[in-house]
Image (cartoon, rainbow, N blue to C red; front, side, top):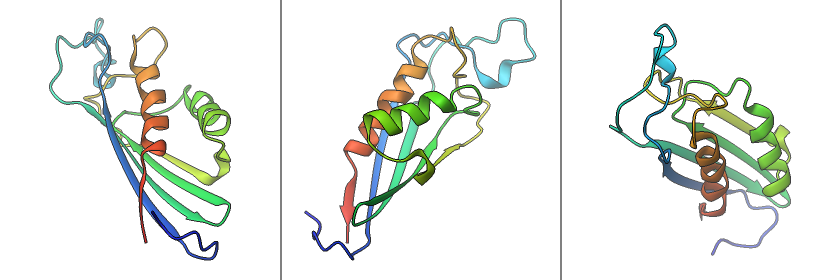
Length: 130
C-alpha cells in the first residue's frame, strides 16, 4: 500500500460502470419529444474518480457520463458526506453533458440508485499511486 507519511501527497484513481436495471429510460437528448425513451442499451455509463489525499484531507474529482446533476446534487452531497465521510466542499462533481445518457430525473427507474452506488464503489476501490 501507499506510504503512511502524512506529508506525502497521494493520488488515486477509480472507475466503475453502471447500468440501469431497466434499459427503457428517458434519455437527456430526447427532451423535445413526447416520449423520449430508449429501447435498449448501447454503452454503459462510466463513473471515474481521482482522489488527492494528504494527511487527513481528501479531495475528490468525479466525472459521470450523464447530462447534468440539476436536482440531484443534494443527494450526491449527502452520499459523499454521510456515507463516505468526505466534506462535500472538497469534491468536484462533473457531468460529461452527454445527451445520449439517461436522465437522473425522479421516476426514471434505477439510474439514480446506480449512480449513488457507483459514487461509493468508485471511492472505496480507488488505487493509490505514489
